[in-house]
Length: 362
Length: 158
Image (cartoon, rainbow over all chains, first blue to last red; front, side, top):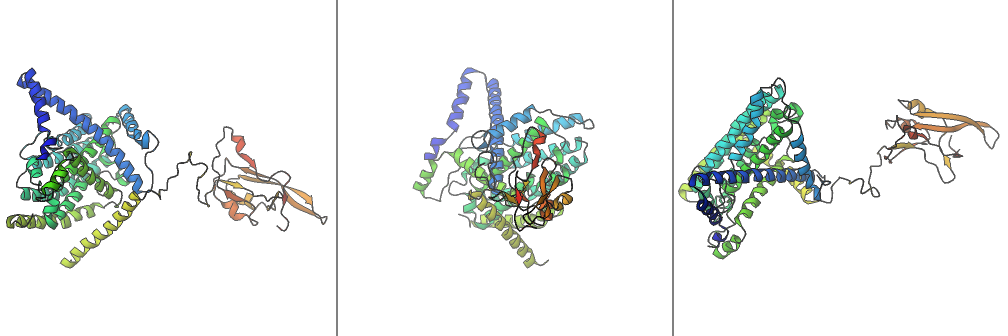
């Protein structure tokens, strides 16, 4: 199969064997951890800059503006300038704040969202940690982030922060249900929670095409729930500039604020990558059933390109949501989850299970 | 709430959301109708709304005539005293003495562009111009005389 041309396992194996030839096994593990850690940090920093630039440009274009266009070519230097500004700014800790918790919260938020990157398959064989409960791991790790947000809100000793954090908690707890049910529906279809198995189960077509209408419904619900979990508009009640100044990060400045900002964008990437992996086949090229020659042509496009293409497509959709829809009220937000998304996704899960048992999918 | 209502609501909601997304999607794709003007670069082709208030000017015609009778309605209407009219008496061709403006003093530095003087003017002698590049290093340069030297009132304007 041509798919093996772009298999990254040989590359990573070569690196592993090269290290093994020079040092003992324990040191090899340590080196590999450090190297992957550095790679993740670099990736996260670059990704956040790209996403912020993209967000500002998409927002501007949708509002008939031009967006950043002064610094660098097409305003690309603006992001670098903003990052430099944030790094150089003073990080103020308020007098009334719980000093330890206040300074700990950004690290909790950032480290959880970086941990969630581990089981994501960026390409064929390009996975940090392909564990057998990958999907469950990602959902549980991303929901840990809310602890960081609650710590930030509580320790700021500020009513706006506190309200924002509580809202964020209520929102994430309720929307995780329907997001989880949508994930389970794909786990039912592919029969595994391992990311690599889920991707391989889509070798003859992505689930969104193979699974008929129920999977499309699950996809839409997952995108809505993901937007809510990210605290992004139209579900940005946790930040709510008009009521709570900036919600849980009202008191943060400089680099600590930048870490919340970074975490927000990385979480967006993680959830969009999840949606791409579950519904659009992750790094799997566009395959149609048993059209071998067509599939082989598609295999010539490298798998990371497919993965990032799909992920950025979903990110674009989420940005499109943000710059189109008005914000929901708290009661409307909970109405949407408990009266609409949750019952629909439950029935939908049953439909998908039935479809899987009867073998109605392709 | 009946089941029909429930699904009807979902359908209506999705439809209106799709309509909104269609509009922003069109904006995103069609780059031509961007509203932003890249100001210092497009100084020559800058488009401003006609009702934009830049400063008060007094238009003069080719023979250096304006329409101001010196009635001081604008001076009275001005909420912060930005207009000061000094009048003089001139003898017209019939030999009568008539009031006319000597200098129309306009303080651009205190003007708030409230448009009340333009509304108050009975003869439409003053209008709002679009020019907005008023930056100067010396504040006294913002004290302007609106009537041109040697200008006269248009015949027929009372």
